[in-house]
Image (tube, rainbow, N blue to C red; front, side, top):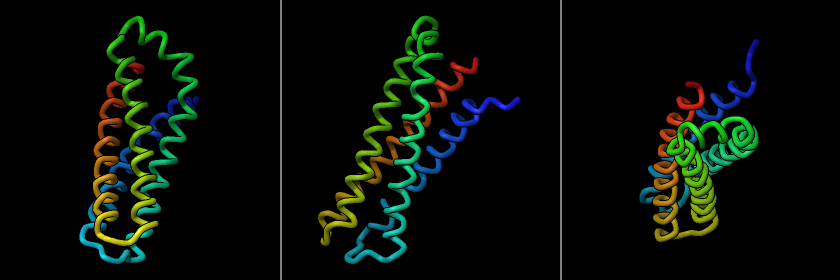
Length: 144
């Protein structure tokens, strides 16, 4: 029988990897952009939407983790439990940075806001990669 929760967790992890890659795209395409091209607008909107959906899915999965896995990890693998909590905070920061970058990229004109948006997307991508690494560590501890 298929375990839907584990399937959702796996899908969440894969979606996070796609979000990290997607966040890099506007960080690259906003470079030197005096005016936004339509493709860049789609890139900004798509990356922000993808990281938001991934974060929302994590938020949806969290109560099950808290009820089933967290008590065992706190007793048997305390550093892994802390890694999970760190992962959750970094994921929240990545989503917030992506939304701030989206607002800067789409809402204002000029090189300064676009540069700030580019940096914010780059940092959000780096945070998302860190979240993925920590999630893999936690996932292997939960499964093992």
